[in-house]
Length: 105
Image (cartoon, rainbow, N blue to C red; front, side):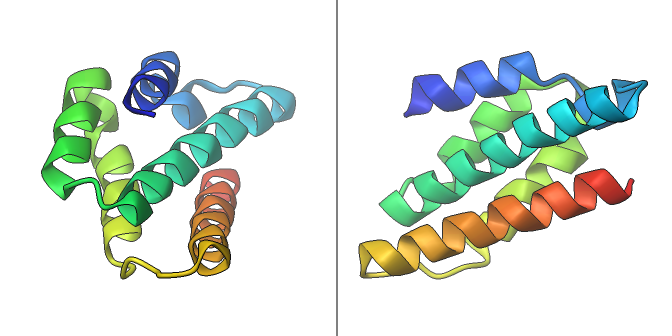
């Protein structure tokens, strides 16, 4: 899962900012939503916040740090859930929130 997050972060370089067409923006926002969901999944698995923060800071350009750290903050603001369904609900909610934020900007 750590490799997946690293790969996803490496592919996304401030994607909403660089997208020129609505189709490109949608694709960029989908990637960002995927990343947010993986970050949330790692949170729900109990991965320490610093591990994810370090990965984000080392895998993204400085210009994008605040954007991706906001995803980390959103995920870690949620408590770890006990049931798989509750974890999935949190992950989906964070994915949807990032998608909305990305599309609005």
